Length: 122
Image (cartoon, rainbow, N blue to C red):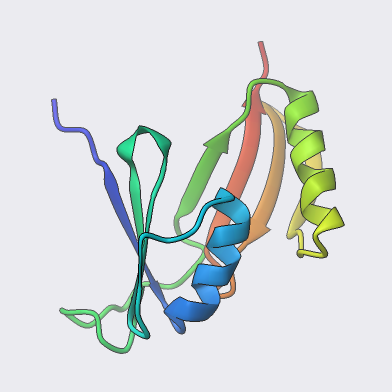
């Protein structure tokens, strides 16, 4: 079985997006330049932010067609994350809501990439 461990997002400004993801991941990047920022998360997953002006081959994808999912243990955890996020003065695309699969909160990064914070209903 192949397990993806590295995710690249094509962004307008990696440094600006890096600030956003530093807040989201609550950790500093391990690499940062004007064209690329890299985070290494617990469990070894890597998230790279690559300047869409310098990515090879040229990108054509639109933000919002893909989501980054962050699973929480309970609906209460989703709500607590929401409150911490708001306390930092950061924007929320969709406040917590109960959907078919469970509790969900939607954020977007500076480029419009979606980040879903959720807890599956048990």
